Amino acid sequence: MKKITFCLLFSIFLTCLMLVGCKKNVGTPEDNPVVEEEPEEEEQTGYVFGYSCIDMDNPYFDTLRRSLENTLGEDEYQLISKNPGADAKVQSQQIQELIEEGVDAVFLCPVDWETITPSLELLRDAGIPVINIDTHVKESGLIQAYIGSDNRNAGFVCGEDLKKKCPEGGKILILECPSMSSVNDRITGFEQAIADGGFEVLDRADVNGEMEKAKEVMEAFLETYQEIDAVMCGNDRIALGALSALEEAGESRQNGIRIYGVDGSPEVKSEIAKADSPMAGTGAQSPIRIGKEAAEIGIAILDGEEFETETYEDTFLIDKGNVEMYGTDGWQ
Image 1 (cartoon, one colour):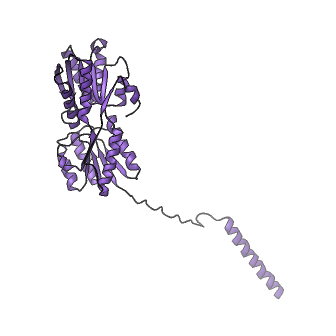
Image 2 (cartoon, rainbow, N blue to C red; image 1 turned 135 degrees about the horizontal axis):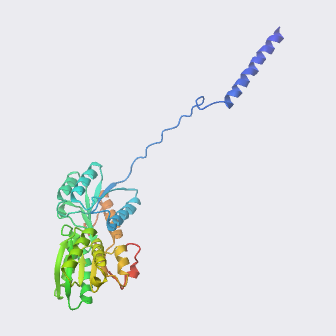
């Protein structure tokens, strides 16, 4: 009897061992749930900057944005960009958005140097420093620093070149934008260079810095004035608009007309490189250098370090004689 009992117990013991072994091999996720740890949210570090320019569709301002991003990215800082599309009201709304998004500082190029004042006051009241770039604001007491080009010289070198090419003077047109202080400085520099040079300003027009509007105005000027020696444009986008109108008017109207711009954009440099193009030259600047300098100053301001309150980058003429040295596939 004892032997039978022992065998029965031993059989039950082996059966249990087999069941345990089988359980290990046929288990399901429900049987053996795996508890996944929630990923920890990355804590945002570093400063957040805002960028509001005139018009991001202009390659100059997009290049400036990329230069800011590249420099800030070295320290893992962020840049929130807004594109007002050359609309001063939209720019004001977008600056309010930047304030609500809690940026630490703003890089600002005003669409209109005067109507931007209320937005500057809002930024001041919010304790957000402003780094003014490229185009001056009227109320300089509401900004912490300015970084831009020597715009007066950019126009001056164009005027000097025109005097060399037309030593007897001539008849000129001016396409400008009075709401942009940078363009005002360029036109002022140009007019200073050609003063007492025998030049007559046939006409001038506010084209708001826009290529299409410049084209429309130039088309009207070509119908009104039969004798034109040169066209001075406040930026390269304006110059490209004037060139488009001139090209559509035909070769007979292109002879002897010289077009000048300011920026040194790849598009205009490509035109200058063409021997038969009316594009004579551009007062070149560097959005890459401006963006890098502005970013470094912005960081210095937030870090409480010393910084330059005014910085002016050099400008110079690119014409048919030196355009190959600077290249046509990018900014200098």
